[in-house]
Image (tube, rainbow, N blue to C red; front, side, top):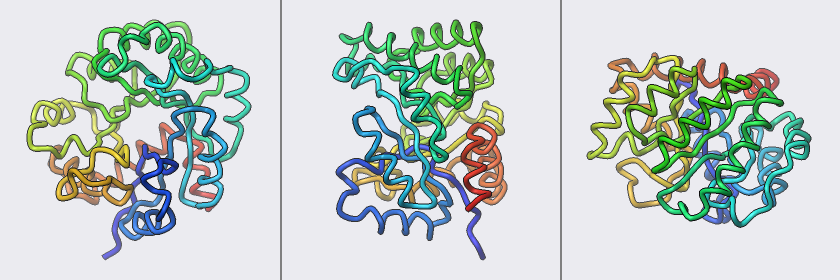
Length: 267
């Protein structure tokens, strides 16, 4: 039986973890039913490298921005420059950006300034915003809600592991929640409950590889092939067959990332 195709909506294929066997890693993902991957650039100085990966592999798309933990180390993005980069046919999203107070609260000011610039780029490009949020629920909600009122934009809360209140606020804005390997961890009951209450048509899956590998690979390098394990847990959470869940999250992905859908149809 053919595996239903799914998409790893967030991975980091340019990281050193994949340097020695990138082609093998991508081939393994494809053989596991992963039809597409979005590799995420976390600092614009690396954008050419990430773009080259997307150009080399037909099934790889990319997004770019400044990760909040890099906001104080990199020049602030220039919105016109990012919009120019975004014209590439395989560039499908803005970010990742956001707020991380768990590791880098001392750079809060830089993080907020960077986030606002990324939001502007998302509003002007009509490409989805990719948000990283950790230990910053109140501020991320306030900023996203306020800026959405100024000019609408689409958004995914990548690797969502925040609280119920933030989930509800983001869903109320029409945003998406993305499941990572965290959803499979034994102590993630509260997170699974949050996802179970979300609309099925607002769910994505991802690896965030090389991080957060699901069992039985926990503690080892994560990779795009393992997104199928997260999707299996997602199907269980929603009490659906894997086929049904996979088909729905693919529809969700193509709705949020329309350029990705075009790339697939042209493949």
